[in-house]
Every structure is written in structure tokens, then in C-alpha cells.
Image 1 (spheres, rainbow, N blue to C red):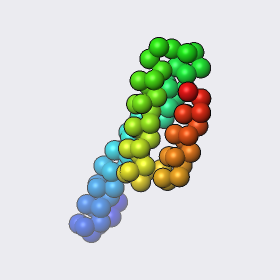
Image 2 (image 1 turned 60 degrees about the vertical axis):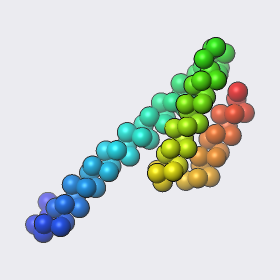
Image 3 (image 1 turned 90 degrees about the vertical axis):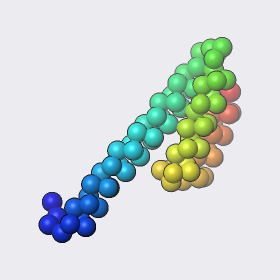
Image 4 (image 1 turned 120 degrees about the vertical axis):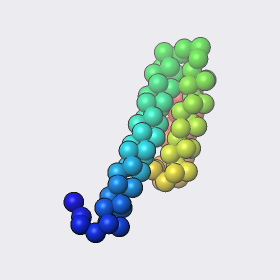
Length: 82
């Protein structure tokens, strides 16, 4: 643990940001898995889950958690399955 006040604050801020980033990325992965499962099972709510997954991928990309090209690739693969 750092001794300098500003360094202590940076550690706290970094931990808070990391927790938020982990939450967004985890939600994105969950949404993708739900959408893929629904598409394979041909559920009636597959289109809604696909929309949610694409939205969560865009959100993660806008926050810089994943690269924009990785987001585009993920969305393209989802759309290909639909």
C-alpha cells in the first residue's frame, strides 16, 4: 500500500474503475452466451436477446473494454448465426 496520499487515492479509484469494468464485461459475456444459446435452440425471444447482446458489446467497446474491431467481429458472428 502506498504512503503518499495521491497514490492511495489512485489505488482506490483504480479499484473502483476495475470493479465497474469487470461488471460491464461480465454482463457482455453473459448476454452473448444467452443470445447464442437462444439462436441455437431457435427460441421465440432470440431476436430480443440478440439486440441486448449487440447493445452490451457496443457499450463495452465505447468504454474501451474491448477493441472496436473485436466488437464488430463479435457482432458479425452473432448476426451470422441469426
